[in-house]
Image (cartoon, rainbow, N blue to C red; front, top):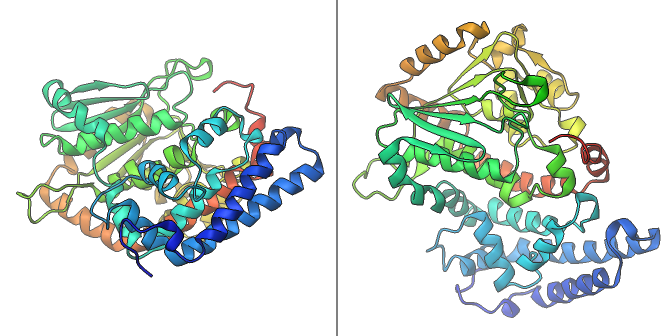
Amino acid sequence: MSAAPDADPAALDGWPALAEAAGRETAVLAALPSPTERTPGQRAEAEAAKDTARAARARFLDDHADAVYDRLTEGRSRSLRIEDLVEAAAAAFPGLVPDADLLARERARTQADKDGHEIDQGIFLRAVLRSPVAGPHLMDAMLRPTARALRLLPEFLRTGVLEMEAVRLERRDGVARLTMCREDRLNAEDNQQVDDMETAVDLALLDPSVRVGLLRGGEMSHPRYRGRRVFSAGINLKNLSSGDISLVDFLLRRELGYIHKLIRGLRTDDGGAWHVRHVEKPWVAVVDGFAIGGGTQLLLAFDHVIAASDAYLSLPAAKEGIIPGASNFRFSRYVGPRLSRQVILEGRRIWATEPQARLLVDEVVEPAELDAAVERSLDRLDGEAVLANRRMLNLAEEPEDAFRAYMAEFAFQQALRLYGEDVIHKVGRFAAGPA
């Protein structure tokens, strides 16, 4: 069914039952101690209240996802990113998703001491993304440039340089050179890194003088790798344990934001470019040292990947207990189902010198030869025909509806995984260790 953008939530079938269940859940949780201090009986009481409310939310959204989305976006006349969409949903439909105050209280706790209210965001975003009406509109919104990038664009166009906490961006000879520079933590990913990466990708795509993009890790100050370049150590497990990795601002924004922009390009409303809906550019990635977890996930979005001969790749999902982004969607396309299961389910590490590595990287060169190989690859990808053909390859290999269907279920399953007892136990080991 559909509803006018200003429809009263109470007029939608199932809303009274949801409001009652959500109110009961709030009352039960407020009367109990924090999760780690609850008795077995109290834990069972809390889980029962949460399960009842979540079932009501899922039923309500099964019937009314499009009506809810239309109200939040004024009949799809506004483009809201996921972080803005969940905030708007909390205000317009109290109890459907957690509001800002509840999320702030949750963020102040460790992952083990949260009640998992982000799972309600996962239920909501799964319903929106799997809708053939609301889903494409949200995907489109996530491909638009961020407000931060638009604010920084004039200065970057003037100087060609931007220094951020996690990423350095430099334009040189028509190439946007992105360097991941979390030198003290091996480029481990967190909310700030995702924000900086999306800003850098947006600026590279918005700058008309940039023809090709390059991503590489910088030199580390970490004691074990001091002075050496490293690509990425994947998700920051210490931050995950402390409760500082969020579903919306990290896990979903990362996939629907800058990684999807690497593949699909930046959505533009430039009326002068009537023949192009997206601004796209070819991308090269260089793996020094290792690409662990999210680092390997990133490589699947690049047009050309160069690895040092002493580097390795891995997706340690079994060790961390969470889903490795869109790798379960893309990895088999590169390496086939059997090797995908060995890497994702069993944690197999692939060294650059193994024959199987050539399924994931295009060139393997000695570390001393990396710089020259990079410049050759950038030169090969600098051309209009390359741009047109990569667009057609990406359309054939990763249809937008297929990716959207994957991300709908990912939003829900990853939310559940964040609060799985096995995940909390595994990442708890990193709480007191180095980042």
